[in-house]
Length: 241
Image (cartoon, rainbow, N blue to C red; front, side):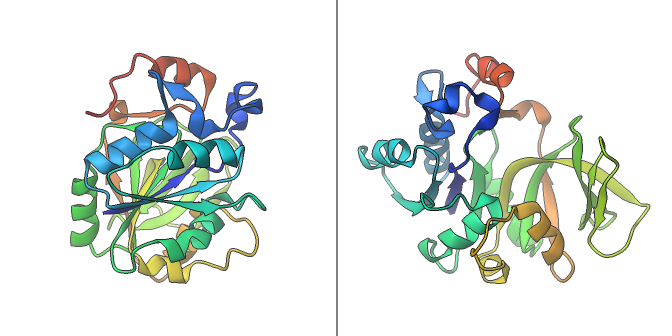
C-alpha cells in the first residue's frame, strides 16, 4: 500500500487559524492533522507516503523531516504554484512506486476506515478508481448508475449537473468523502500538471472509458475537520485505533 496525502491547500474555511498555520499542522487531540493521517496510513500498512505542500510549506516539511517514521515519507513540493487536487496528484506521480495502488487522502479528513478492505474491493472490481463515499446531506453529490459506475456529478444548491456521457434516470447519489483508491495507471491518464485543476472533473472524464466506482462507508466513521465547528467536534471524536 502507498498513499498520497493532500496537504497543500490554503485552509480558507479555518481562517483566521490558517492565517499563520498550514491546515496540515492544525491540531486535533494534541496532534497535527498530518501526523494523524500518516499514523493511520502506516498502521494499516502503507510502505510509502507522498505529501504535497504549499501553504506555509516549510512548517509541514520541517515537521515531517524532523521525525523518524517507520516508512518512506516523500514531499511533493508545490511552493511555486498551488496545483489543486488533480494537477497536484499528477505532479507527484514520479514519487510513487510504479505497480502498486495508491490511497488518496485529504489531510483534513478523519476516518475510521479499513483501507485494506478498500483496496481489496478496488482490486476485485478492476476499477481505475474507487471513490470513498457515504450517504450524507451535502450540496455536491456524485452520481452512480445501476452498475455502480460513475455517471455524473450534481450541485443540489444550483441545480448544475455534469454527466459522464448522457443523462440517466436510474442513479444513486453519494457524497464524496475526500478519500479514494486509484490504480497507478490513472497517473498516466491525467492531463499534464502545467496548470491547476481539480480531481473530480478528471474522474468524470476518465469514467467515459474506464471503470470508476465507489466504496461506501458509514457516515459516523468519518469527519471533515476543515471547518471550525467540526474541528471543535473532532477534539472529542474517537480517532482510528
